[in-house]
Image (cartoon, rainbow, N blue to C red; front, side, top):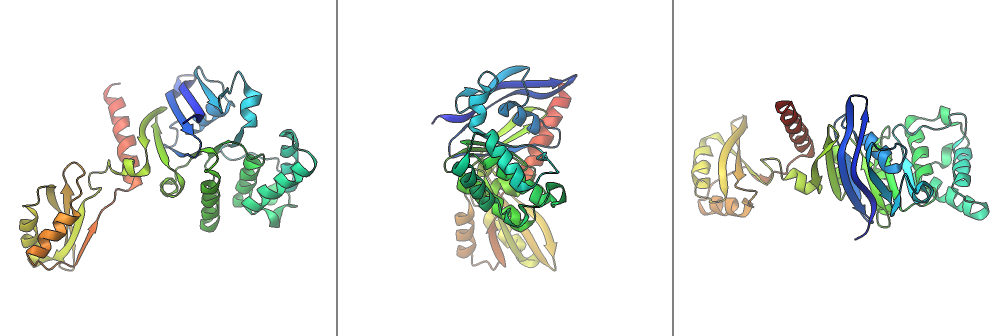
Amino acid sequence: MTALIEADELTKSFGALKAVDGISLAVPRGQVLGFLGPNGAGKSTTMRLITGFLEPDTGSARIAGFDVQEQAKQAKRRLGYLPEGAPLYAEMTPKGLLAFVAELRGLRGDDLVRAIGKAVERTGLGPVLDQTIETLSKGYKRRVGIAQAILHDPEVLIMDEPTDGLDPNQKHHVRQLIMEMAKEKAIVVSTHILEEVEAVCTRAVVINKGRIVADGTAEDLMRRVPYHGAVTIRVAGDKADAVRGALAVVAGIKEVETVGAVNGVLELRAIPKNGAGIVTDVASVIRQKALVVDEIFVERGKLDDVFRQITSSDLDERNNHA
């Protein structure tokens, strides 16, 4: 599958700070890539390098096969970019700004009118089209930024914090829009909202200190959490030992730990060996032994736990080698 977004060994330093340290990635059509990392990890700098708004110290980037430095016009025709903070002309109205951007994109006449109408409909800007941008809420300003990015229906979308400042309903709307557009585009979404990755992204890349430290689906990343796939059992305290004894014979269980106790009910967690699926065996042995339990459920790793684990371990490793 041909990649619409390609980055090869990108590096960028600002004085003594190496903001981007050899990042390579490829994003094909139909993929939404979630770009994650702590503050200062190099996410926004990487996106500016991929879009051609910054020149790399070394490495290269291509949009739809066009080098963003050597073939800038061809690359940017196929690119929609929502930068961090979405800087806009505060004294203009959304209608005026979108008309201005459409003309810059080479749209004229009916094509211009249709493009603006579609972008306005998709982003819900109708009620504020004739207000000056400086009077708009943060959420509406963000939507103006999204509208100008999608106005010319580009093959590639690079979006830095697209739902920043939006309320829950607006976030849902934007996420639905991204999923709808993803069928025909390659999209990169930089975000610190981990639920957003699960909601809209088909792949997640985590960077820290300018380097990629994890790359996979959200499910792949969540499997890194030790308790992912664990089976938690809630049982009366006086029956906990019997449950522990029964679980000791299940071959796929690494260990059984006590998570906590509330009002005499203990919460036991059976940790699987090597990510093995154990819930069927656990349920079977409890049924065979006729044990009475209050609840059984399978744990899923949480992306925020993965995020902390990956970025903390990477930082510790770097400090140890310093």
